[in-house]
Amino acid sequence: CRVVVLISGNGSNLQALLDAQANSHYRIVAVISNRPEAFGLQRAAAAGVAAQVVDHKSFDSRESFDAALIQLIDQCKPDLLVLAGFMRILSSGFVQHYQGRLLNIHPSLLPAYKGTQTHKRVLEAGERQHGVSVHFVTEELDGGPVVRQAVIQIGAEDSVESLQQRVAVEEHRIYPQVVAWFAAGRLRLTAQGPELDGEIL
Ligand code: GRF
Image (cartoon, rainbow, N blue to C red; front, side, top):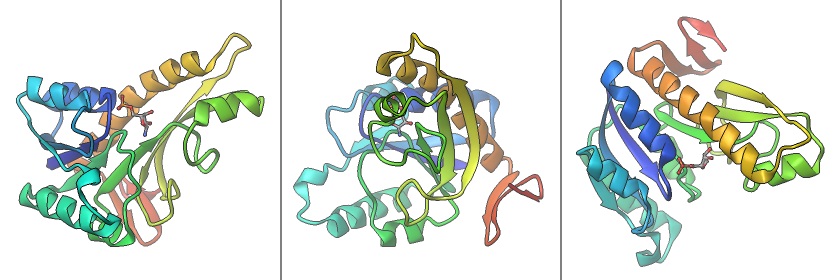
């Protein structure tokens, strides 16, 4: 299974996916960042994976940026496109083009806390539980069908930083698992929702 990963920053999820691929049926064939300074580009290079930049600042519209991105991605002939801290909203044309082969990871228990600054908002709301969700991407931002979640309990001592770190541990555990499921043909998106091992989730 050929995987292309899109990033914007640190790339710790990319690292987890790179580290896990030796034991799975997927190969990361390219990493693309919309930010030239993304540290994840160095992680890709260190792993011997082609790393490229499509800088959104050099395009005058979301559509033209997305078109350039599609062209570059499709040259890599991916079976699966993985968003790993990719901080651009994708156009509906882009999302439709990769329907059923586009995954994202979001640091909350979706459908709760879509959008940014999830750890801060969860703390402010006094929640007792938090976590992370891996989902297929649809046109609704952070709204696509959830494939897998990991839950953490929030303690009195937790801060934005501790939640960020604790959620990251779970992210790095579950994202490679979901990608491996897809690569093994165990996971697919059907009209009824995501299907794992023949059962609708
Ligand atoms: C993660 O929290 C992920 O859930 C969110 O962006 C962050 C990316 O972190 N979508 P990294 O770049 O993988 O370290």
